[in-house]
Length: 359
Image (cartoon, rainbow, N blue to C red; front, side, top):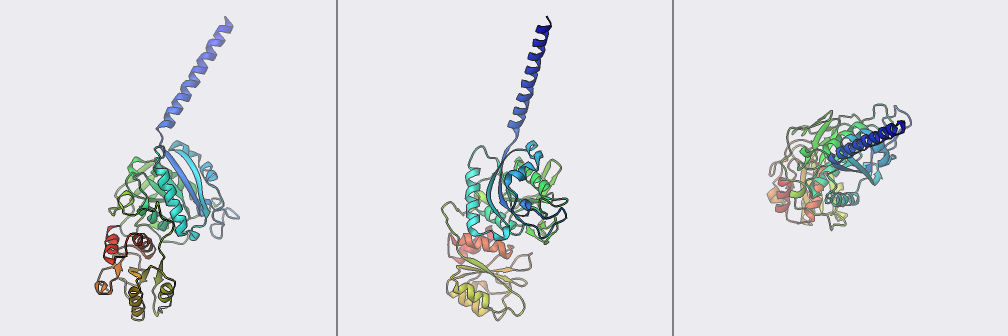
């Protein structure tokens, strides 16, 4: 009799455990699938001590270690990881961008991938984000994330930034919003955000147009969207590209000589971003070099080092007469990205100007 009671108890316990396992599997099935693509950067960096927040070594921690350090990720998504690169982001190249974009598009084409998070160094994070914003061919969320303190630092910001980024990538509200940047509990549009401070955790800001939303606790809250065309609505396709046209930036300052412009022309660049003072002003000593560069076929885009505002067409220069393009609100580093992609489609300054007003 005692044996039968014990057997019944064991059967009941086994059944209960099966129910628990089934409930856990059902709960797991409800979670969205997010792939983390790691590229290195400070978020994967290590320092000599817990107080080392400058002078650390970037890109030393692998993606699986990043995921393991935030076990709470399992509560918000089914997370997998892949190491694409392991570099400090100041070493990001056009070749890296093309490789990353193709991998992102390949993953997003899979039905079992609902969103992607890309861990990235902060130095060029905004550039990679904008490049992907122009070439990703999916409405599924793509979120770039980094940190300003290495993983070994006291109060490292990487783990919470990564947790928040995965939450955004798993959020239905993030679908169709374009490529996003998430740091410091804030959500930004790739086109508009920029790094504003060398070392502080609140460095990424959309100073004039404003961020898109917040991540507060377990809540992803959007308050606005970027209206410029992006991702599936762009005309750019990198699937067959093995390289990008050479485009560089010439920085302007008081008493600037035409040395850089002439060097870029001699190097055979296809385009040049004139990172000008004020509203894209052209110093008298630079105008002949820019005019000559355009005559040789180089596309000239007037941008501004100011960082905010619209560069007015036919404002500080007669762009119609000179056959120049203006960058609208894009800063020089993002204007370079758009011009490179534009040059894969056309050499027409009218068409390129249309693109700058579209994207």
